[in-house]
Image (tube, rainbow, N blue to C red; front, side, top):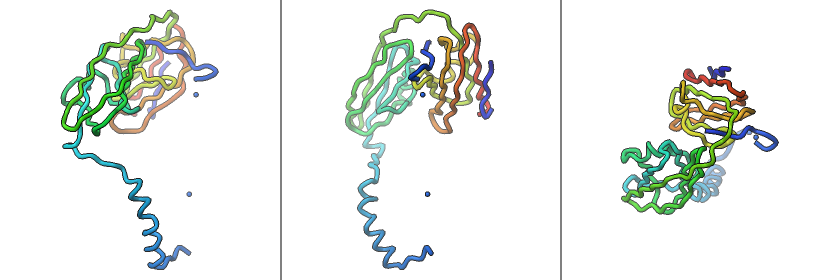
Length: 205
């Protein structure tokens, strides 16, 4: 089965997967004065590059996904490189490293301005799942984080062709692909059938 957009191992979904404007200038001015404190109070804090610290991550497996304060940053193999280090405001940050075949790892790192924190970790394997399986293959034009039933499974390029498909237990799944850099997420329900390949072709998305 092939699914076209605009064009490992998981558990299927079950019972729990799923607005006369005429205003005098004095009135406008007083409204602005009243709102000004609120605008100032909610203005986000912006830190300059000179104030930032950085985070690099090395992990086995290297395809594990790295989340910082709940936001996906990339795979460990990518963040291991100095040029891809994540710029962060000084202070504590929650780091989570996940791969569906391994137990997740979570910790807090403290970032200091002008310094790089290098996190190294080896994930603990989960017990191997038993067949039957179906296979999911994904073709996506850019870097996209793949989520099945709300759980991160990797980047789309990992599941792009023959011998690279994602093995899943047969059943119903909710697939969501989120662009890593920019773009609109794509999502759809799909069915994985035993001993069959399901292809999601989003090359023109």
